Image 1 (cartoon, rainbow, N blue to C red):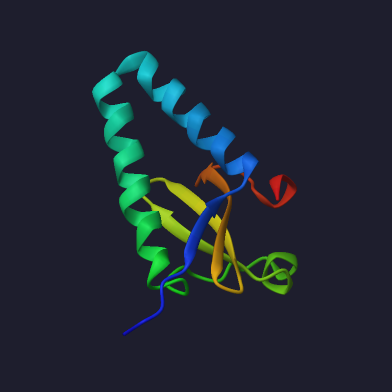
Image 2: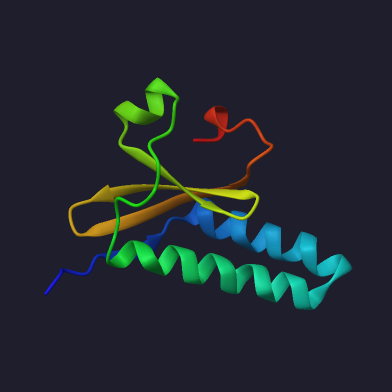
Length: 101
């Protein structure tokens, strides 16, 4: 039996998801809800497969142990610490991200 990891959303990631939801909801509430469900489904996979995300090209992020999970047009940045997957940021893929982390 494979072990399960705890998924923990850090405060910046929670704020990112709320901001994404509110922004999309302005134009289409149904789509906003669908996006949250898409994030939830993708991120929940990390509980059993925490290393499925890609390692970023940024050297600093590599050294800090970051991984990225691609969800549609968004990048979910996370770090595996022991038995916990820390969701650190959720950022649109078109944004520069190194200064945010």
